[in-house]
Structure formats: structure tokens, C-alpha cells
Amino acid sequence: MKNREVAKLLYDIADLLEIRGEMIFKIRAYRRAAQAVEAMPTDVGEAWKQGKLDSIPGVGRGIAEKIDEYLKKGRLKYLDELKKGLPPGFADMLAIEGVGPKKVKLFYEKLGIKNLEQLEKAAKSGKLRKIPSLKEKTEQNIIRSIEASKKRGGRMLLGHALTLSDEIIKEMKKCKDIRRIDAAGSLRRMKETIGDIDILVSSEKPDSVIKFFTKMSMVARVIATGPTKASVNLFNGIQVDLRALPEKEYGSALLYFTGSKEHNIEMRKIAISRRLKLSEYGLFRGKKFLAGRTEQDVYRCLGMDYIEPEMRENRGELEAAKKHKLPGLIGYGDIKGDLHVHTKWSDGSNTVEEMANAAGKMGYEYICISDHIGKLAIARAMDKKRVEQQSREIEKVRKKADIQILQGGEIDIGLDGKFAVSDAVLRKLDIVTASLHSGLKGDGTQRVLSAMENPNVDIIGHPSGRLIDRRDGVRLDITKITEKAAETNTVLEINSQPERLDLNDVNTKAAIDAGCFLAVNTDAHSIADLRYMRIGVATARRGWAPKSSIINSYPLEKMRKMLKN
Ligand SMILES: [Zn+2]
Ligand SMILES: [Zn+2]
Image (cartoon, rainbow, N blue to C red; front, side):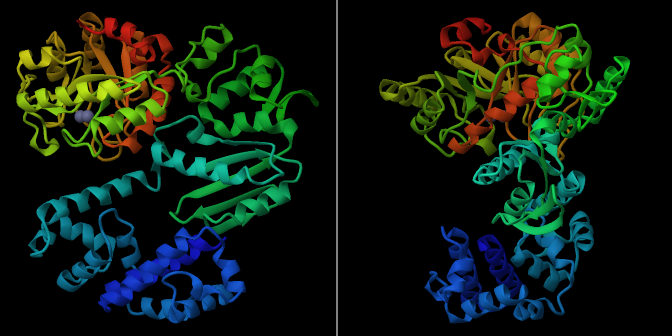
């Protein structure tokens, strides 16, 4: 299917027309047509072959002719002409979050900016904000987006990569010649950022699988293809590598391509110490094949227990597996409730009832509504009166919901470690989460320690306040934090927002070793965010967390008894 490719062509035309200051109705016509093609359930290529392009809503004769030329020749003269005379750097600028064609045009006209480098310079020297229609905040956002995209260097957040790989695997499963399929690489190990996406399949007809893969509608460009492997770019620029393997080698290849490199190096050393040889093709004694069909077979033949992919970082898992002392990790289906979600009462976009119903559909037993309370204006924090009003609404929803609903609250830890909310208000809440939202530079240890000393604070939310590749967050003396958490029975959160994953894997392990309890929460600001629980659990698994350490894996009454008071 060429739907996405054709849609992108039309979007590109619209962007270029906008930059060139063409009439708005023309620009809109191309966008409308692009949306229609994108949403078509059938193949635009079929419609083209049947001469029915103009039956697509929004596609008139002019646009139909351009699609026809593009599908015939693989390129479009009109598009080339539109690009003529425009600085080639425009495309790079359009790729920056928050910079659309309107802004590119504005920057070019007012400041003569032609590429990303010039844009960054202008933003950093405060020139953008001098454009009357532009806010200072926009300038700051542009600087941040440029820095984030540089730092990521093409890497993407785990939460987003998973959505993509799920989509690819779902599509690939339609190919009848595939027996097994897995994402490998850092994605399978659930690292917080991902470079390329690696997919492995087992098949007796690799050529048919490769053909299917390179023809998928989400593929923008085929980079390379051979009899058993192929590399492509998706429309968002992400590279996907596919390898097709015989059933017999699938396990050893999966092990090899999952990594980490350091884990694999140690594995090979262990094989050598037993006079064996381990490679992506299998485990061998001399030329004799011993194992390779499954990863489990390989570990077993080396005298080890199976190591979950999330643990394969050479952080002690190999020794533990040899001694049969690996922890049983929290499972993806073990979570019984989400203890940190927002609603319209503060900065969320759904009602209490909508959040409760969505959580119920996920099979949870309970949910804790944790809207902002206090003075945090940017998050529409509630005062005492609104907390009481919310309490009455929650009571009403409880009567019809098939899930237990707790009323909690998220309070802000001030620069002095104190709260803008009285203890009398906090005492009435089922669960109090205290977190840092400002002053996110320097050392935050003392602020978090004093928050934990308050007997009403049950959980420390997103403890460091970091945003992956965007903001480091505060420095924390993790030994002091985990000691105090264990001593005061304060729960530490693993926040599952794709940009947060905070505590991270390493600090999670420190907390587990210190005997702390953790909560894996989504901090959902809408129903859609609830799905991120999976990457929070993944982070817990990367931190070797057993089910027994995660409080929201317990039934409601047991979980409540584990809290501070
Ligand atoms: Zn927060
Ligand atoms: Zn929150």
C-alpha cells in the first residue's frame, strides 16, 4: 500500500505552499486530500489503477493528476519546482518539534534564517522573541527541542518505539510464512531510549518474508535488501532492520541480537570455559550443534537459569544465573492498580468517572485519583475547598463504578522541603504523593529527605524530576534517600511517563537492595496515558524488582496496610 507515501507527498506540497505564501485555500486543499488518503482503508494504488483517484474525498482533478504522475514516475515535477530556490535547510527546521511551515516562513522573512544552525543561534541570542507575534516561551521551547533532537541523535523514547514496533509486528503477523517474530536489541531489553528497531523472524521462506516486509505501507524507503535480511526507513525516519532465520538458530540469534554487547561477551567467555563455542548460529562443541532453537536451551546448556532480556546488562545477572539466585521479577500483568493519575480537577483531560472506567477496563482492582493540590498554578492545583468538592464527586462515581476509587493528591515539595498544603487537608486523603516540580537544578536530597519525614507523605513521585535528554533533574544521594525511605516507610515511585521513567533502572535496584517499597504509576493525564504502565514495569524489571517490592501489585486492603499510616 502506498497510502502513507502519497499522503506524505501531499503534506509536503502543502508545507511548501505555505512557506511560499500561497493562498490558504490551496494549502488546505492539499492537507485535506492528504488526510483523506491517509485514512483510506483501501489501497490508493488500486484506486489509481482503476482510474478512480477522483472518487477519494477531497481529491479533485488537479491533485489526482499529480498523484498519477508521482505513481507513474516515482517523482513529481511540481514538487521539485516548489523546492527550487528554497534553502535546503528548511526541511531540517520543519523536523524540529514545535516548528511548522508558518514559523519557518516567519523566521526566513523577518530574520533571513535558512537553516537549523542559524535558527539555534537566533533563539539563543534572544532574536526570535523580538518578532512581535512570537512569545518568549516559544523561543525557549525551540531551544529545548533543538537540544533534545541533537542529544537524542536519532534515538527515540522507549514508549514511542514500543508503539511502533507493536504496529510493525502486528502487520508482519499477516504474512503466512512467519512462524516466530520478536523485536530484539535494546527495545527488547526495554532501555529508556532506542536507536534502530531490530526485528527477527523464523521462517522457511525468508524471501517471501522480506518481500512482505519491504512492501508494508509504513515503509518510506528500502535501504538495503538481501535473501535473508532487509533494512528500511519508516516515514518518521526510524530505521528498521529485519532478519529471517531458520527455526534451528532462532534462539541463539535472538540472544545475540538482543544483547547487550557486554552480556554477550560474558556469555561467550562462559562457553569457552566449558570448551564450547557460542555464536549467533548456536552453541557448539567442535562442530557438533548443542543448542540454539530457543534462548532457554542455550542458557540451560551453559548450566545457567534463563535470564530475562531486561536484565541482560552485565550487572551481575550472569553470576546470579549460575548460582540459581536470580530474583523472580514483577510481571507485566501483576499490577492491580494505578496510584497516580490526574483528572480535569487539575491538569488532566478526563473526568474521574472516565479515568475509573478506563482503569477498570484494564483489569485493575483500584485506582487513586491524585490531582495537584496546593499553589502550583501551572498545573491548576486545587485548594481545600475544591478538594472537598472533588471528594463528593468521587463518592458519587464510587456508587456506579466496578473498581475501587481512592482519593489521593500530589503535592509540591517547596525549595525548603515544605508544602503549601496543611496537614489537616493531607490527613483526609487516602494516599499523598509528594514530588519536586520546581528548582530542578543542583542537589535535591535535603528537600526529598524532609518531605519523607512528614507522616502524611506516603509516596515520593518522580523522585529526581528528570526528563530524558531534556532535563537532568536534581542530584540525589540515592543511599541517603533509600535509607530514609526504608526507615520512614515511604514508598518511592517509578513514574511511567515516557520522558520520565523516574526512578530509573539503576536507582530502582539501589532502592530494592535497601529494602524499600516501590509503586509503579503512570501519572496519566489522560486515558491514553494509562498504557504506559508497561514501560514503568519494564523499568522495575531492569532494576531487578520482585513483585513483593511493588505495593500496587497487592490487593487493595493489603496495599493500604503497607502505607505509612
Ligand atoms: Zn508531578
Ligand atoms: Zn502527577
